[in-house]
Length: 480
Image 1 (cartoon, one colour):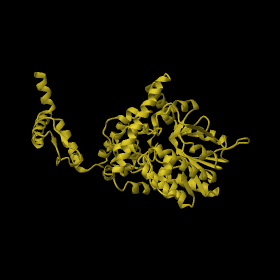
Image 2 (cartoon, helix red, strand yellow):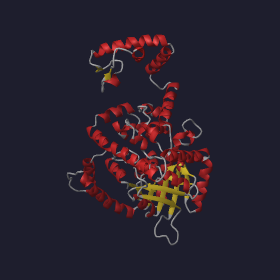
Image 3 (cartoon, helix red, strand yellow):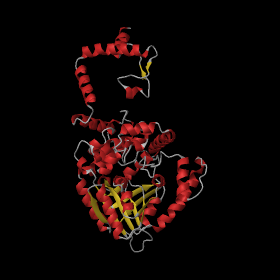
Image 4 (cartoon, one colour):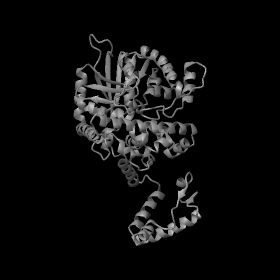
């Protein structure tokens, strides 16, 4: 986990402060959030046109994932048996480092010099691009957003839209430098031209790569297949043109049957991009057979644990239902104030605030469970009904029990608990505090900077409604 500790060296609070001051980033995020929210709402509205309800489908999806998790070892064996029967090889990796070693070993054995990649968050967990490059193998990201962040030398900022934090001007500068042409002034009307430019460059990589690497949105136990959902078509080029196809994915991505996959597909694209169905849905099974016009000569699945197995049967097992749609971060006020890089690892937003501490260790991500307003927008839109705020709250409780919070915070909580158990004293002190705050506001109704809460009031005013407590105001209204 040295790589994780390096990424987490600068804590969330420090990164968040930097991102809040980044004017370019803030502008990009302001434009992006309404689009995500509106598209999802439209997508969910279309369910009614099909005679379906979100809550009904969400309950069905939750049950499908729970069914898998209750007997995950059995379903994994079934998947392995079915995949091998169709000519694929199945390998297992304890963690990201082992997964990266396996991919490098396969590439070296097959004489690979270049590997094209479809978007895979598991490969980000494994830091696969760095491992390939260190072995002299060139990794080329082919998802447009991933291609952009690779050129920038950055990590994805969003699991669905990796370059959501980039402006058109920044993308133009990256393309001009990489593609060897003069920089031009670009507007949103030029986005199709930039996409065509990237497509022309990537086409040469598609045709010359010896290996294709993809993730999997789902693994189908019934058929031993990987399901890949994309909007750009790059996934099909990566998985059918090279002679070797490596699928690297987490062990929790299983679903039992094709029918279950169809149910989840009612929710995944609508939750992610607002579409009723994505442009490309590929079911990848086995290897190229006689009479097939395309397909890999070798298909290899690498199924990765990386901390997932230990969540089974734990209070955090529900997190393994996640289908990586990104809806939680698209509706999160914290994420769209900071962007994904503030979270310090692969997964940003509410899902990252839970997954990162669970997969990398609580001590490596102490701040993340606190990166929430508690508004539950994330939980209300999750298509598999993961109680994200509850899980973050549980992680915060665990920090207190393990004495991982500052002594001053723990002392304050103990003091508040002692005081709250004594109502008369609590009301007396609350009245004194209300009068003091009103005096401090000096009739302006707002306190500019409050010494006891500098982090809360340095960037915002603290409103003070009146010199009376809620209890006093309620009692006065009842008497009236």
